[in-house]
Length: 211
Image (cartoon, rainbow, N blue to C red; front, side, top):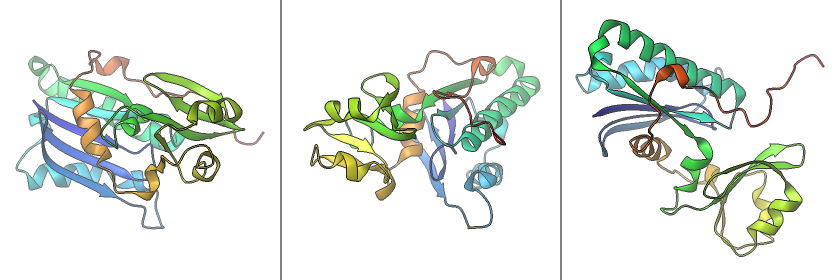
């Protein structure tokens, strides 16, 4: 199965092309300072497919990060995944195009090769927590108790706080981790594959501007 996986929820854009669990191409796109990194998602997808002599019609599954993360990034990648799947279904209804949504928390839990505790800054004195499953937005004082002496995946903003409780805290932003490849592999195990049910994961409601 040829899988196109992409992620614009976190601090970079990742696009990965794979066949089953074999990675064909994986690329990371940073912001150029003029545009948000998700602005390059579509052009990168087109280029990677072309470089590998493939067309969108060759793709059998689309996998995307559904959040939590940047609200703009979550909307960007889930919208692209849904629209692309809808168009491919219209062109090749017999192909049964599949989609898979994977949480950024689950993706990050795998970056060290295990299934580790994840706590990302959710602001308002909370963290988005994953511990084998998504626990939601948890008060930082409660997360402090969970972190003690454990391997922890976090971000740059919370790393100093949690480092006082464990010497095994790692910021995913400080390393070059294969997030796109992890996303593609996790997608293979997802059972919900109807693009109509692919939705952003907003653990907290999007901010209301102007208030």
